[in-house]
Length: 80
Ligand SMILES: [Zn+2]
Image 1 (cartoon, rainbow, N blue to C red):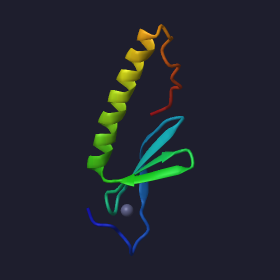
Image 2: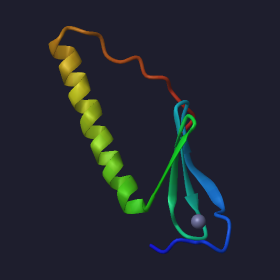
Image 3: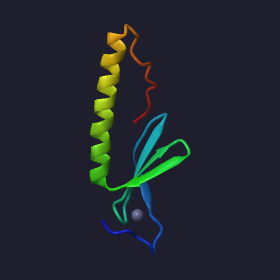
């Protein structure tokens, strides 16, 4: 992926929830993930990798909480 120093990225939203928003630049194809005041830019392959890692973490967290007798995480639902 090449960067796009001469133009401002033009983003459109791929998904938005109560905690995070993910946008795609229609010019350079980069993905921006917004978490509160923090924005992480990555390529689509990295987004896929992050998705897998987060999925593993959520699954492990659920199993660990269950093993400890804790209730499931109360997940806020977004519009995404
Ligand atoms: Zn861009």
